[in-house]
Amino acid sequence: MLNIDTILFPTDFSPVAEDAFAHATHLALQTGATVYVFNVVTPGTGDGSNPMDFLPVRPVKGDAVDGAEPQRMEVRTATQEQGTVPVVYTQTESASPETAIVEHATEHDVDLVVMGTHGRKGMDRLLSGSVAEEVVRQAPCPVFTVLAQDEDAPQTPIDRILVPVDLSEQSPLVVEHAAALGEAYGAPLDLLHVVEEAAFPSAYGVDPLSPTQPDVQERAQEALEALAAEIEDTDVAVRPHVLAGYAARDIVDFASEQAADLIVMATHGRTGLQRFLIGSVTEKVVRSASCPVFTVKSFGKSLVTRRAGEDAV
Image (tube, rainbow, N blue to C red; front, side):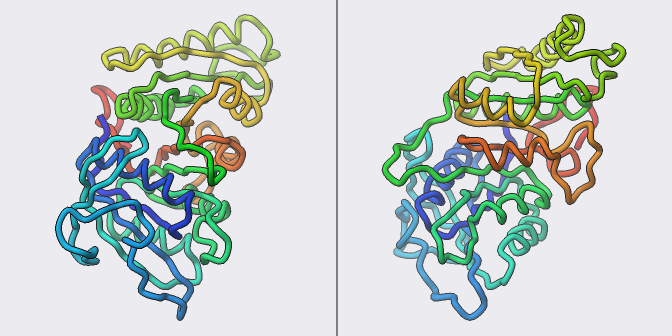
């Protein structure tokens, strides 16, 4: 089960932001979290816009959002559920939206950031791809990015979740987050590992070999099955897959071919990258995938209760 009290929703009030808001409110309904609507404007350009003019919400009581206290709002979520969630609205001025978002998430101990990418032009580039990537790199908590869709395209429910893992020590944490999301959306998981020729053969317990060697792929398959066994007490169906090739390319291609609706993955694994860097594979997937991506950090906040014998993150 996801443990979420606060969801930060950075927005420029564009259509893609509405799609992300639907996911934020769905998770808020599932967990009882408060959604903090956060708008960053360039210094001197704030117009005091009322979020009620942009967001698909209706106050349960009152006529406007009180920026200081949560107000319960009627919403329709990504799964077309209707309900009420507490919402707080804040606007701030900053020449660097990504910095403002990360600082707000850090100062207010936010559990999850949910944001769209590639918002409309001329809106302080708040939801541009570069801003989203910086937030994924630097935020102290998981980040859920929702890519822009055609304006006329219907919102896609999350019916299938792809979980790429590198079989590092962080993989169980990623799988646990994916299982909790699977329960929240009622979606099965596809565990995927891509065997690469230069990708730390010690993970498979063998000497360096071609990724097409049967022994390598068999060991990877066994490792995936062991990960799946760790969440067998959930109601989420899991299917393991092993491919040989190039991780970033094959993850994006597999997600497209299998019609994945969400990708859940770590921001780094065996590369040992530091806090302000994102693993090159994850970075490419966030930039290229055609579905939302949920990133989990080894150094940041965990939204799941770790199982007995596992270290807290």
